[in-house]
Image 1 (spheres, one colour):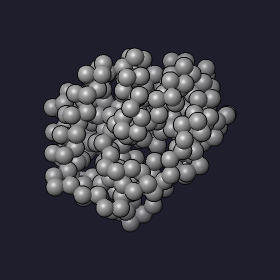
Image 2 (cartoon, rainbow, N blue to C red):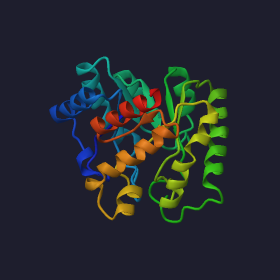
Image 3 (tube, rainbow, N blue to C red):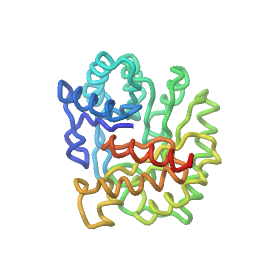
Image 4 (cartoon, one colour):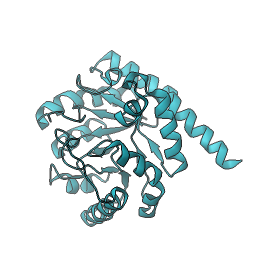
Length: 258
């Protein structure tokens, strides 16, 4: 899953794009490098960020999705949003799945809409909200608490009629570096949910702060954690750097077949 942010506020500068030819070129490069999904987001959800209203987000992402769908009609386009109105407009423009950091908490109309549209839904765990989530994250047992969260939320989604559910532990969303490494180490425990597992660690603070570098220098660290994640059950890698992630997937596939 290649990350395409239509925003000027994402934590990693190279992932910021504007709609137009530059976005189409970036998407083409990702698809050529082996991306199966393009994840389009209109607002930053980095720690300390302020959330945009639905209308402003839609104005950013919907024209971009329409342009991408027209140029690359076979590509799977994911809309990274927590607003039901944005989902509706994005799907009409060509999106075919939803990536929601809020687990339906920000818009109660989202679950019924996803069920009605019959599209895949990425269910992510987050403690708190983006603006405050990294101030004092606390868990007694982070793995157990995130697993319990998924058990409850997947049941709610299925009751609402959503059947195609992907789970994302939400690395960096209301979690310390220690929490993130614990979740990565225990990732296999989430496979009991029988849902594809998405790993989103690309160039995040857990990597560059641990290494004492920057997001711009965190590609190698990203590949290391992606590899650990693949060995521990991850099925989808959400990344800024598609070529390197695809190479990790291919090598792990050959390793398993040997």
